Image (cartoon, rainbow, N blue to C red):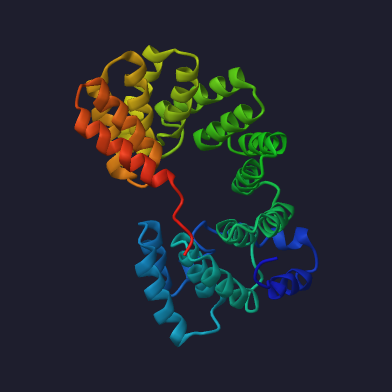
Length: 318
């Protein structure tokens, strides 16, 4: 089990019933802040989080809490800012303090579950995400979070069911549709996965949701490469790399595609970028070495093969 969350349980019991608490749970996404009647420092911290500056938000919230230590809203916001900075232990401690002051919402319990995911404590993550759904069954993000957890646990049937629930509540959500495709792949329903990835791309292209992700392009391209449909996979990977040029996985897949096409010059370029972005991955060095070898650059090939062997060899015990 993870860190103790007894104050959260106590607050839920005091709420009287899950249905009653659900009426309190529909607060804005960033930590449960209600801007209309919040103090100016909290509104400013909310704007920082909306801009993705969680470190500055943390600093501002700690300053505010020093003056008002019994502000449940501020502590929930701080807990969320810590979660977004990948500080799950600190975040859970702050959620515990916040729950002693103010009943947690479904969103906040979902975030508690995300903290446990970061701590690799999947049983506790499932407990709190499930409880958040019990409080608000109309929350698509709750179903999506539970689906991601079930996918991580390789419970692909349950994951697909959760993603379908989320889509019923939020039609046109490309992120959820893409993850439904992943669940179908886990179930060896590859044709259904391809349909889901294509649908996610279509929704993104239609602008049905803000933000564009490289994931459906990458996932669909990988399936098509496995089917030797290289001509269709290439433009998908090119779109993916334009969206996320810093993702080594995309450059790796581009390199492998070019290798299969016999285009070793382009393969070398893509694999060199992938290796620079993720230098500790031995197979990238090996693939780059193969590209150099095909190009007749034997010394560079040997250096990459040596690096691959070095990285693949576990360190000697002291």
